[in-house]
Image (cartoon, one colour):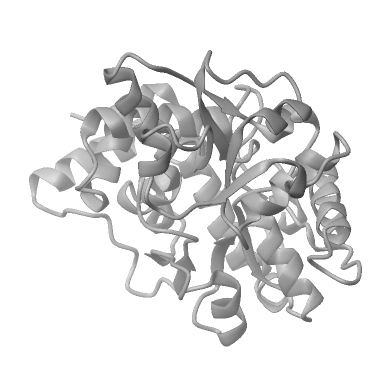
Amino acid sequence: MKQIRRTMIGTVVWAVIWIAGWAFGWGQPEARADAPTLNYRLKWLFNTSVAGDVFAMEEGFFADAGLDVRVREGSPEKDAIKELELGYAQFGVASADQVIRALEKGADVVVLAQLFQVNPMQWIYRYPQVRINGPADLKRYTLGVTYGGNDETIMRTLLATAGITLRDVNVTGVRFDFTPFLKNQVDLWPVYRNSQGVILAEQLAREGETVRFLNPAEFGVEFVANSVVTSGAMATDHPDLTARFMSALLDAWEAAMDPANVEAVLAAVKKFDTGTQGEIQAAQLTATRDLVKPQTDIPVGRIQTGAWARTETIMLDQALIKTPVNVVSRLKDLSSFQ
């Protein structure tokens, strides 16, 4: 029997009804017949890094808010901001660089929540073979970079803090194949700390090796990661729907990040990500929690205005955008609709 600790939504009575419903075969909770249908496009595939999104769907947070929300996987071909513009989705997930690029092109996009307080894009390395005390130390090692990816932007900025460029270090382009790192041909490899990072760390641990992660934020380079977005029109014309959606989503994320709900969260994720081993998913959930709620008193979705401003500055400095977009003016958290 699952015990779900929920914030704002849910009571003992709800829990009794829910358990009874499962006994009668209700299955996944459904919204009322008259509930508005909303499409929510994720940035990437279903896995533990979207635990809160999956939990909102599986545990009835959206349905309790009177919403019929269709949570869709993302991919390079299914960009959330483009779908907002085309009307295919009402809400989505995008990284700060996507938002800022879109604003420069004239897109009407608004940021509603910042899901990750710490950017999961980091570099894994073997320790003590590799020792990083500052950006200048990178000159001694072979560094993996995804050319054209946001990790390249982050690394260029990190190196610039030490007055060096990518030309001053030994750089190799990377793809999805981790073989060069596993064969010790590359010293630092870009990974998402809470997904590939967990898998690689576990694999190397079995071989008796210890890993650490280079987090650029520890050296002053803050680059905002995944955030919830919508169109300006949606936020302006449908403030009630926006508030209900965001309240349900953030409540679900809070519950999903609560250690008391680990078993229920992992069960929900497993329904959508059947290819990852359970112990790996458990470790990924812990890593995700550390990025989403690095401190227990930080609410899920907190928008770090300064970090957004610094991200725009980074993109201007790296010539990824030509003109300022004043991204801070497009930040509207849940309190804006209440």
